Each structure stands twice: as structure tokens, then as C-alpha cells.
View 1 (tube, rainbow, N blue to C red):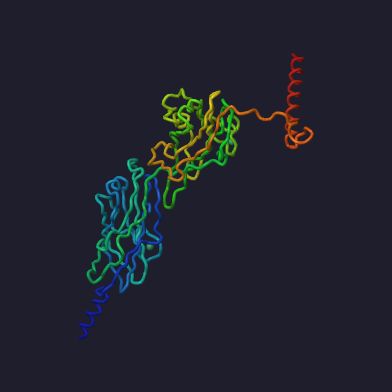
View 2 (cartoon, protein in one colour):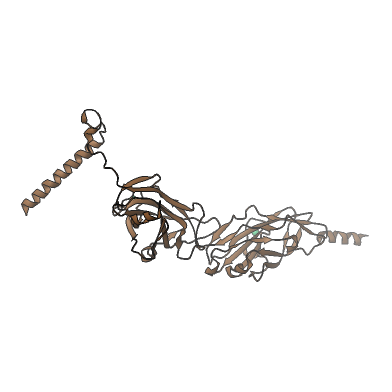
Length: 402
Ligand SMILES: [Ca+2]
Ligand SMILES: [Ca+2]
């Protein structure tokens, strides 16, 4: 009798009572993120395990990896950690089994751990990312696909429950994630300029290299090529555009070509292959040494540009200058140096080029009694007169000295 009682107690202590481990995605798992190459121990997903009815021993966990063929290239190591106490941290001794590589759609970790009755433990999946640029733009997700992917030595007495599959958010391999942003001085309303106007402020925009979402890490945008579009009202009006110039912005909202802004590169219709008119759209490509020497825009930094447009004399034109996200290219390609899809483009609003009527010259035409009512004009006009007079007297003085 006593022997049988002892055997029953031993059986209970040995886990033969029915216990269950409930599995779920952890609330602390990371959102979708982008990560650079060659990083180690990057967390991609966390799961939780909670036992009820007794402790549950686990002997293996199998993960399913999406995009497996590319994952085999992207990841040099996959690691699983189990927070055994649990104390919220994953120590080296808490690694389950050994570091794995991907040879198919699944990866199995053979290692024993105990999910303690009533406690919530976390499982953490980490990856080591290789150096292959072939995986730029590739995205990966890790999941526990089914309850049978949790190996239980105490099965069938011990059981697994949960609404499988549990899938982590995507990790995408990038060098940089960027965004087009309108400059603070970007022309927001239509305006008119005279025939033959040179370096008209056409477009101000910034290339913003975004800070990665945790736990990601990114490098930055090394600009390779930038194509600007000029859209004219009719195809024949493309002939009225004589040049387009890219300027390095000096940080304010004003376009000051040659004083505040520094010229990076100018293009004209004579630049074969860099100035392409198709229908009513001219595409002007800024590339080569002038672009390549620009410093990398590191993550968290932005660089602002001005685009100035020049027009031929005597030709009417209505046009708009814009830059599209797909026409900004980093040195590693659009999958590696990615531009977020919103906004798609930045435009500098409509410019009308015409033979404009001369502005009213006589201030006496304004206000009563022939005097201007706009007192702000008086000092400017007076200063102009004084400057002209001063310049003339300076020339006379110089001539006398000579
Ligand atoms: Ca721990
Ligand atoms: Ca400026």
C-alpha cells in the first residue's frame, strides 16, 4: 500500500499529471524593421510560453522561415534563447541547442528547458546577418507554425495550445531608408516670370535618411543619381527650357544662386543622354563626379537641394519641376537605398513664362496728389537714387586720380 502511494506521488512529481503550455506572440516583439548587413545577434521575434497544471518540459522548438532560399544567403546564424527564471533577460547559458543555419523552410533547435507552472517565459529568436548584397530588399519572417513544432517529452499527457501559426513582423535588409521632403521654401503657388529668365527658383526638396525602427540599424544614403522632371504644358514648349541647375542649399528658405546656394551641377539640352525630352516631359539626370563626391547622408541626417530653371528668350512656356522618389538613387540600388512610398514626388508648382507687361514705373500714379501711399517704397527708392549718385561720384573721383 505504502509502496503504491509512493509510486503515485513519484509519478505526479515526474510530470505525469496533465499540464499544458500555452504559446503566443510576445507583446514585446519588435515591429517590422530594416537592418543593415553584417550585424550579429539581431532580435527578429519573441514568443511567450505559459504553463498551467504543472511544469512543462520542452525538448525542441522548430521555427519556420519565410523566403527560405534568400534567408539561407542572408543569415549566417539563427539562435533561440529561453528566459528560464524568467527574469526578462537572455543570458548566453539560456541559448536553446546550438546556433543553426537555414537549409530549408524550417530550423529545429534541440535543447531541453522547463516552462514553470503559472509563470510567463519568453523565447527570443536572434539572427546573425551575412554580408551578401544580393539580399538587399529581401524581407523575412520567423514563425512557430504549429503546436507540433514544440517538442514535449511528456506528451501526450502534456499538451500545447495556442492559435498557431504565430508569426513575427518582417525584417528587411537595407542600407538606408529615405524619404523625400519638400523644402521650407519650396514654391507652393503658381508664379509668372519674364521671357529668358535665368535660374528661377523651381523646386526645393530634402533627402531625409530616416532613423531605423528598433532594433534595426542602417548606414545612410550615398547619392549616385538624381533625375529631375520638367513637365511643360505642350510638347513644343520643352524647347523654351534652356538649362536646369542643381544647387546645394545653404539652410534657409530663400533661393540665392551663387551667393547662399553653391552650384553642384548644371545641365542643358546639349548634355546628350542627361537631357531627355519625351512628349511634354524633360528628364534631366544629375550624376557623375559632381554627385558622387557629395558626402553620404547618414541615418538621421537630411540634405536639402534647390533646383533652378532657365528659359530661352522670346518663348512662352508653362511648366512645373518635380522629383519622383524612384528617380533618386543611392550607390547600392533602390532595394538597398530605399525611398518610402509617401510622398511619391515633390513638385515646385507652376511657372508661367511670358512677355510680361512692364510693372507700373511711376510712383506718382499711386495715391492722392501724385505721392505714393506706400511709405515702405520711399526709403528703398531714395536709397537707390543715393547709391547711383554715390557710384557716379566715386567713378568721377577715381577718374580724377587716374
Ligand atoms: Ca534569463
Ligand atoms: Ca538659401
